[in-house]
Image (cartoon, rainbow, N blue to C red; front, side, top):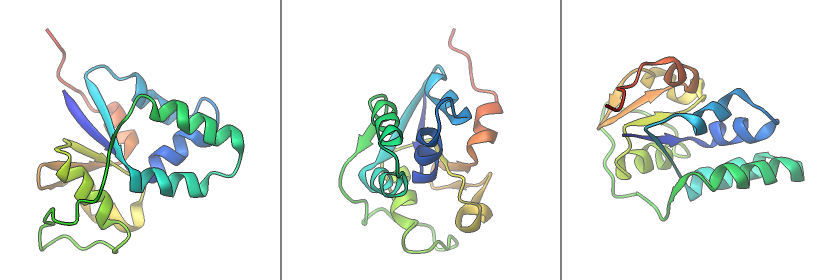
Length: 136
């Protein structure tokens, strides 16, 4: 089973409008969705309408939320991220996720398609079209 960490911008985009394409992530078989309190708070801050907050709550009901900080999780020396993005990468690594999905091209773009620790960093659209092992 894939453990897929969702960055705040993925949560935001899925909750922003009804029937957002990213909601397909919640329907994938063999995929456990994971996020952190940190990512949730960032998504909540950026959503403005009550209906968006309600959609986020519904989506989060099907997501494992990892609590606390992962400050002690090491990040490889060759990875450079702004301080506000490090908690996302550390939480993905520390919660033993296989993938980190983010739309943050500016900060994570150099990591797209790369493994950092045991986590492969991808754009959500790439993950949605990538083949996954079938269950027998």
